Figure 1 (cartoon, rainbow, N blue to C red):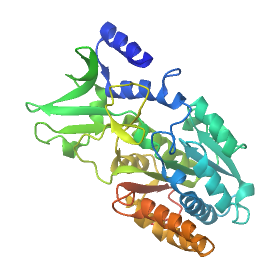
Figure 2 (cartoon, rainbow, N blue to C red; figure 1 turned 180 degrees about the vertical axis):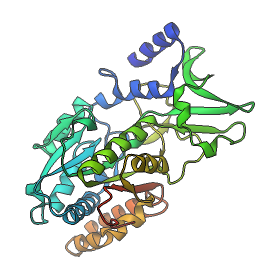
Figure 3 (cartoon, one colour; figure 1 turned 60 degrees about the vertical axis):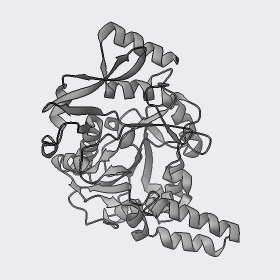
Length: 354
């Protein structure tokens, strides 16, 4: 039994089952035993690999997309460049390298990271030493702002609900014998966030809601509406909310039992982009429809960048670049599962890629 599993088991014995959201929060962010306190979680030596770690081309094209938004904003002399959940800092470093070639952009930007993990902050400081760190988005200063979040929302805790006998129950985490597992309980207040069009789903259906995704996107959108700017959200999930169980655990690049070793595996769930768009527009910003990652990246120039790199690469280098391009854009890789959503202040024109 892992130390965190023992802590959770004692808590459940004392006070009863906990929500799946509480379980995810403890597993990921417990100050001592949480997953993101580990030394290695990203890359080939960790448990999963994200798009910025696959290829520098990803961050470079995203950086130029943000620089384009800065230009149409009127090239403000000072702009907050914010990343939510910046991992090892690879994406921001790649974005700054490419967008820094746009005259005036580098001098105008102040980099801000929203990151709760002290261990990850140390890694980010190595890549982007001039950044400022915040525990949450409320610490971002006033003023024009550009935001990027890549695989941030999928790690936010969710609630799950199961329909049985014509009624909805919450899937809580309790003790099933001597192991952790799902038990059914009465829905909590968060059930009010469930999409109305899914409530008539048949018995056996599962619904998921992510209060953190709704509140986080609304906070970003409210800031953009008040101060101007744009945000780009990239993650895997649904363009339109649908029933289903997407809660999963990853360890060593393979799926694993999410209850077997709390704190030792990454826990995630699919993102409902329509809910993020709704929350953003309710907060006063404009949201695009969700685009597929592959089509979006190719539209904003990933293929052109790949061709330029390949022209000066060795044969082995060209094979690597082609492999990276395929990984990011092919339908059977990340191209369709991953979606992209832009949120902007109402004054800005339609962004590229949508």
